[in-house]
Length: 340
Image 1 (tube, rainbow, N blue to C red):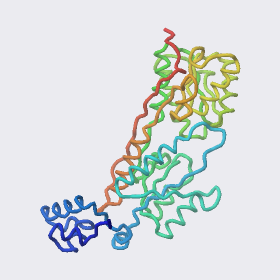
Image 2: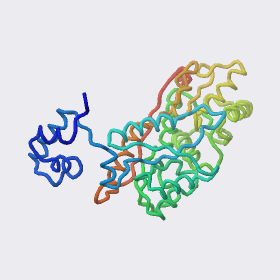
Image 3: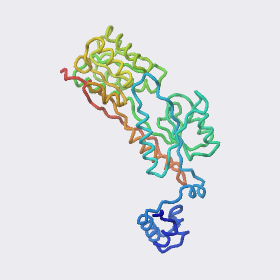
Image 4: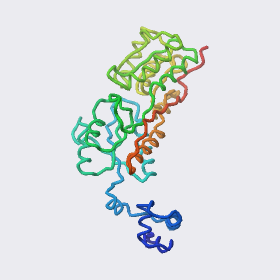
C-alpha cells in the first residue's frame, strides 16, 4: 500500500492542496476549524510531509549540530552517551535530527563548527564542554550562529545565549551529607586538578557540607588527573597520611581507583571505608558491591535544551533564562553501614 499523499489529505478534508500545505507549514494562516479538519485527516491517513521539500521552502535543515569527542582511555564514565541518546530522542520528538561531528583538524574544536556554518548544513548547535575554555560559545556568538549550551557561561557574565547546566556542587554536597549522616567525620575528597573549573565547583560542595557540619578538611583533599590509576595513587597517600573513613570523588573513574586501592589492602569498599562517586556510570551500577554515585539528570537536561532550541529558532526568537538542574544520589553498597 502506497503512502498517503498531500492530495489524499486534501480530498478527505474537503480542502485544496494549498490549504493542506498551509496547515503543515503555515498553520497560522488557517481558521481554527479548517486547521482542525485538516489535522484530523492527516492523523487518520497517517500522512507525513516530505521533509526535503519542506526544507527547501522554509530554508531550514531541521538538523542540530553536536560536537563529540573521544572517550578518554583509563576512565570509567561514558556519561555523555546517555546525554546524546536523550538529546537525539527529544530532538526527534520536536521534529529535529542531531548531526554529530568531530574536529576537522585534530585538537581544534572550532574547525568542525566552521565547516558546518559555511555549508549551512545545520539550523543551530548544542555546545558542550563550556568549562574547558575552548571558546566555542564566543566564536559562535561573533558569527551570530544560533546555539544553546549544555553548561553555563562560566567565563562570561554578560552572555545571553540559552543554557542548561547541572549543579555539581549540590551533587557533592548531597554525597558528603549522606556520609555525615551515616556517622563519618573524616571524609576525604579526591577531585580534579585546580585548573578544572568543573572540578573546583564539585569540590566546593564537599567543602560546604564539611564546614557546615564543623568537620576538618585539612589534609583530606587531593587534586589529580581523571584516571583510575590517579584515583588509586591518591587513595594510597590519603589512607597512609590522613586515615579517612570515607571518600567523596569528583567522578566514578576516581572512585573506582579508590576501590582498587582498598582491595589491594584487603579492605572492602562500604564495610571498611565508604566511597561515593559522581556520574552514576554503568560501572557504578555493576561493580560489586555497587558504587554509590551522584546521578546527573541528563534526560531532563535534554528536554530543557530542546525547549531552548525551539524558542531560539522560533519567529520571533525567544531566549529564556538559563536553567540549573539538581542531581540526585543513587545509594548502593559502597555507602556502607550506619556508624552512629
